[in-house]
Length: 448
Length: 91
Image (cartoon, rainbow over all chains, first blue to last red; front, side, top):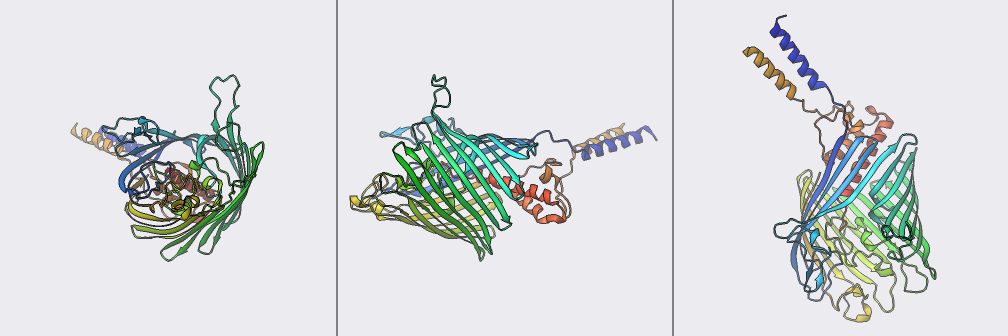
């Protein structure tokens, strides 16, 4: 073989081996994220979270906002990864720190880069946690700042919290045990010692898959609050049951829970909730039905009102509402008629929602109607909060980029819009004879 | 000399050209989805990942063992959770 031929053979072999050799993956870098642009023409929102604006002769105006979320996952292997997740929120034009004596919802000037020439600190931390499978027990552990959702439509709690949770599967049973410290008001170096003014949530969750169509679950949540601050109770127990059922074309998720505990040394809590979410495949799309009941009280000695951790960490996304309940597509401005307080200050609530969603090629659409009222009236207050109708049409520009427009209108109930003061719920109704709130939304949504 | 230069150039070209990763055939396992192996030059967005996992799960026991299927289902749940977390409507 001549030198040239040898060289050719060597080149061919080395090229082939380089092309076929698969490098051992030392670390997999996984990036995900989202970007949403929202434009609103509305008389009910002004780019804040306190609650929908309910005024007589409410001004209509336009504002726009954007959100990006960036998630980086450092994956050593299938059994070990670090998850980090960040958020960047901006209202177009920025957010005033104060304007004619009213302070902004962010509270600082430095959390929104929408003003002239941008240049602001906008980065928020959402999640930083270690996720690993322990080889000896086969259990999965998540330790750190992580998202957690209850098994009750997020009516109790959905939040990012610092804590640790372990999950173990045994055949068809999945058990979960977790601890979250969602508040620690102990000062650094405080002479009282550590862990004195803390609020903890303990979670025990069991799910059993009876067969591929039926899963039943039971949970126990425990909240111990020694902060002297919100939530407004010292001790809360919550037991509940839930199920996930496939019946023909329908998927039904019923749930119910009971709460008891100590609001303070003189006042006990005894409250309950129930609800269901159903999706029924019909025609080219699906019918969505959902509803919930949260017990309330008339303001008596025993507290029969359903308790949460905070209104800002409750949701009911299956409602598909824009105004009655905070929208499941919301970004920076994520609020509702009652400022996300679905318990309406302890009065409890009943909500029923229905709608249809479908798609035709790259076009998707949905239309919904919902009704919300309080469960209990205090004094002469009326119960009806409002009825919402909304619709949305969108188009998928690419697989992961969609554009859509939506409109929502609420016929306010007497509890929020009556001309008579005694009919209205103080703190939620803002003025007599408030205008019906509405919004038009235009949206660009990208997720990767 | 020119031949040698040509051969070197050809060799370099071959070295630098990494084959595009073909889609797995109907009766083939997707090792990248299953075990994060052989994921050369492959970056899926979250929708692609969900789509591919669904496709692999549909191959069923014809291709995957029940244990492997469970693993794929876990990964599908993980991908669904990531998407849900990304799109969560908190303020």
